[in-house]
Length: 453
Image (cartoon, rainbow, N blue to C red; front, side, top):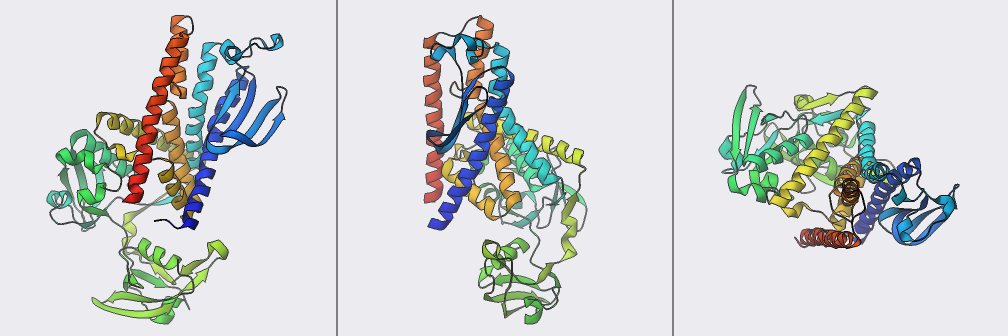
């Protein structure tokens, strides 16, 4: 169970993330509506009673922040809601040309995609160091073992796709698995040389798409660089305690250390503490005690051991550098690929090829928000980009209460030459509300199931 402090932190960053996403989405509707000559009555971030509001502009638009931070809306002048001032004739949403109305409805999701592009552009601009997809420990008699995967194998290709990092590799793994029930790999061994391997998961494909099941089900871990000491900080805790370059750290205060990231996580949370360190030297296990140093202050206070990562595994890393224009192109490509993947996964949930346990509700999203924020600003921004893409795709679904459903209404009116009947619209809204309620039910059920498990 989460501590109260952790839950409050998750909630805080969830509210921050949702507020940003909603504000950007609604601003898309708002600004394109104004460009199209529509009068905006209210721009609200959140639902319910306003906790802050002000009026501004020639149209005396009300801008407000409401009490329930789970959405927002832009309210346009609309003649269907009552009589309008003759001076404002033609400025109501329903009185503008249908292409203009569709543009306004599309603008919300479009701005979510633009936000994702902007975030990825920012994150990629300084260049990134990425870990090449490679195989870690392999479980005996698993799909991976039967296919001949070995520790340290680099994954050069999955089917006809050549993943450059684990994010793209995960997408390719899932895509291949749910499409054919097989994962065809091109591998490069630790000693060089390439070979082919195929993991045939058959009818297990759907189960393996459940959250947290994929790698355990396939039977291998993601390769991470081991906690092998490459160098020591002069006068640092590790040097003073007697650690040497070439030592392989295996535990800190009884916590198993399988990778360099494990070591960072174990040390970061113990600034100034004295810990027991177990390590291997020349094949023999030994241990020592040392007092960790610290860096930063307040919430940024972190423990440090004073060791540097070995360069023995640098060939598993790739440094990507971009010009400003290249990073923008990479941001567009990353957003496009994520959007297509999201659409494919949604479609396969409908057909049963992908588990509906992947649908996350606000509790799970809040936990992801908090965890990403703890890992730093870059991780939190990456989280916002992913959720922004999901929000854009979700709002384009042809469900009447969403933007996509409203676009369908406008297109039908365009083709028909007149608005749909009130009865047709009411039935559509009822179907849409039912669909959303079912979706929310799955999401909350999955959230609760994850907590109980």
